[in-house]
Image (tube, rainbow, N blue to C red; front, side, top):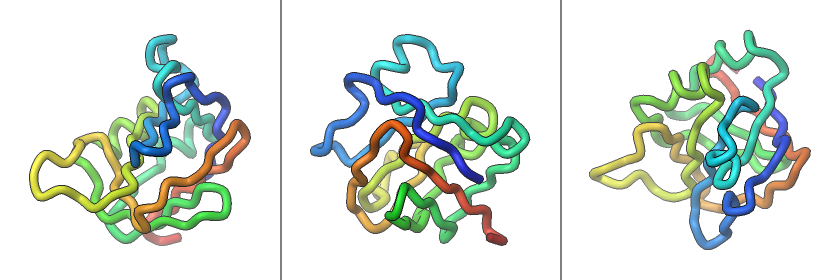
Length: 123
C-alpha cells in the first residue's frame, strides 16, 4: 500500500526526536504544523492497511520492520491516515496507542515526495 509525503509541517521533523507523526490529507491546520501529510493511492488502499508485528514499512530506500502495533494504530491509519512511526525500541510501559514501532532505530530523512510503502502480512 503506497503513500506519498505531500507536505511536511514546520514542527514535524526533528532529527533528535525518533518519531514521525503522519496524517492524511484532511488533517486540520494545527495538525499540519506537527505532521507529515501522506496521500494514499486511493481510499480503498488506505482502508486495506493491516500492519502487524513483523511486517515491513519502507520509506524511500530504507526498509523497517514493525516491532509493535499500538491498539489504535490500524483503525487510525485506515480512517484518518494517521499513525505515529517510532524509531526506537518498544517501552515496557506506556507504548503509544496510535504508533507503529519500527526497527532499525534509524530516523529516515524524509522530504515532500518521499514514498512510504506499507506492506500487509501476506506481501
